[in-house]
Image (tube, rainbow, N blue to C red; front, side, top):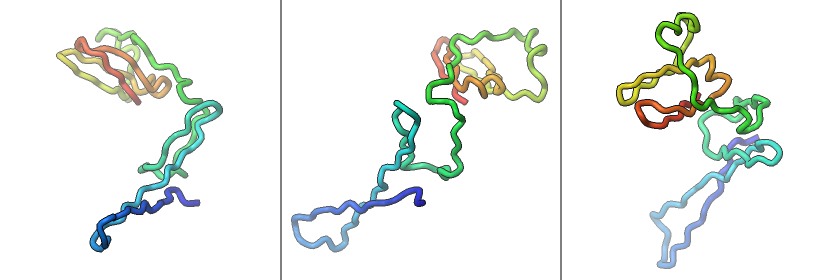
Length: 123
């Protein structure tokens, strides 16, 4: 099975010879099904081989984003985090927040605000 097929687009030159002109080649659109009633995924241009992409069994938009997450104070963090835990840190307009990767593995998205600006944390 070919992952990416190409089609040649022919150009029309009304003023004589096409010598020295380039013919443009564009990839054919490649779509993967996304499940019943869902728009397919456009994988025409991709960097990861399609055979290496596996579905999780979770439908698109089925994982709820975190909205208005609750944060712990400095004194409480030691009770919740281990030294080996990873976090994503964001600093904006002098305010800093950390998001546990362990939590992001389940929710993937966090809608929040930092330094008076709305942000989206994506994992």
